[in-house]
Image (tube, rainbow, N blue to C red):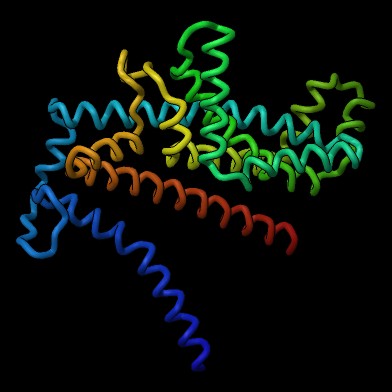
Length: 285
């Protein structure tokens, strides 16, 4: 009995530590105070929501950073999904020795510090721009390459377990039945690993949305920022902290992001629950 109480208390404490800052941030989205403080009046208001959707300089900067963040995350995640999935499939059908070598090389970026990846990419882009292309390369494309390099190994790791669970002869069977290699891949292999591909895509999106180090080292001008250096939410917040406090308009934006994520997780949970129920009914029948 005592162990159960301690275990539950520990679990609730961890959940409190995780979610209390988020709840505080959401609560102060409905306050007109410029700074989150518990010493003054709360001043309940919707002014920050109005300011976020106004045409002020801060609001434009926030939506520009948000747009850049989403564009980079979606594009880099889709590229990482394709390359990571194809890499996992190709590695799956390699010999054991070659498979171990590829898997070892894939794990290095995951175990490596992100600052090492960012610095190595920076050195490579500077070298190519100085000695090969004779121009400054840093732009949206260098930023995109950085995010793809960061995300591919995680897509690979999500797809790999689904391949090991799959019948290794299903691809050859499709070929024997007259399917072309591409059709056999699409019709026989991809449906078996779709869940791993989806989770890998989501993880790549999360990594890209949250990334600061690789973004800071590899970004240049472009996207919605025009001739200025590309600002994402992470770099915008860091730049704001150097100059002054973080804009209060970011608080209602975090509320919207939290609602979207919460709704997405709820939809996935409901879908998974219904799928498990259907599986139990089939087994019972």
